[in-house]
Image (cartoon, rainbow, N blue to C red):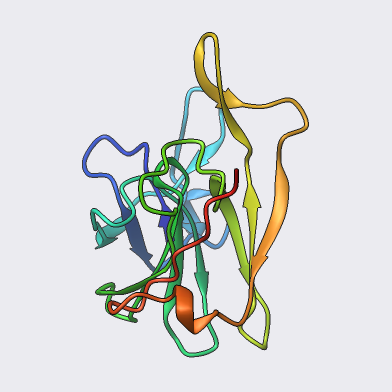
Length: 167
């Protein structure tokens, strides 16, 4: 099981959790403790950092591709990056146009991710906007976007897709 844990205070990144996983909510099933609300807690938890890369400083979503690689989105820098099965950076799939700043008109702020069988990437743009009180989600500003076949003229030498700036 893989989880995006940008808020984890030990180290930001994507964590890999390994079993055995609890099979029921009692001690016999691996949950011999409860939290303050009475919800069951696993007796043991094995986790290790899987992806901690400055390309995605705020990882929000992770999706497995048909090729066995992972796409990871990062809201605060407008990036979707690809990592191999061992968690090593492969390439940026998408990044904002040069010079763009949050809220990144060309890419938006990618939160959730999905990929179909043909490799088209769908992502939820949370629609972060700059307001009088700073940055935050805009009213009815979220959208679902997709990235399909890349235009080779917009792909850099490192394999990144660079979105066009929107005015």
